[in-house]
Image: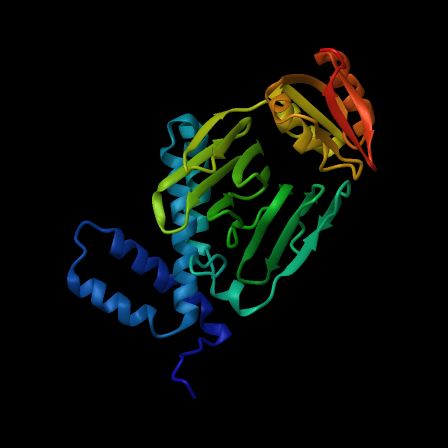
Length: 319
């Protein structure tokens, strides 16, 4: 015996009530050192208590962020009663420490170049995994967690008050409030989160002040150098990959090639790195790298030639 206290299943409701009481006491202005010491004793008695308290705290932070974000204050007031009920009912769904995540190996899904895959998860949620992507998923009675290692995915999370849907990406956590639809991309060491329906919370674990809410039609971008900001998004263009399209709006040729090469093994290369700074706009069929190259060559007064099994874009002779 290692001394760990295991909470019997029939005591789980009691643990949830105790966790809710502790959350209220610790958030109170009258909190004392005695309260803190008693809480440490209570929470360290079992992993069930710690996981339940972590889950309740995560849900409380999500509800609080939604209530206080000025852009969605009106919607949040209408949802206040439901959010409060969620906080009380929250079970051991999301552990900030990720104890359940570490204890059991998640299911890993991966796609190759030009391959997309639809995943129907055990909780009724669905994920569309883009080409050249890797996703880990862990769903059980206590939590719903996914980790996007690379690539892009579109999540449609089912409503579950006790288990918010949490996606980890490059050290950030993206939390769905239930019934949400959102896209997450990890490309070139940067993370982008797009809310398509509902609200999505983005935050650094353990840093509540870092949280940012994205409402439908907004995205949160976390750049490689550490900056993070929210901006309006063109949802139709940003999610065009779901329908086999690549949409560029005054983007560099380097950026466009990186996107097109995700969908075809007939890779496009540039003869000169300086060409990558040229800019391109348009709507193209993902996977048709030859048509894309011909179009770029015409628009930018370049030429295309075979390059082994791929294509090479270069300046025209004499240019």
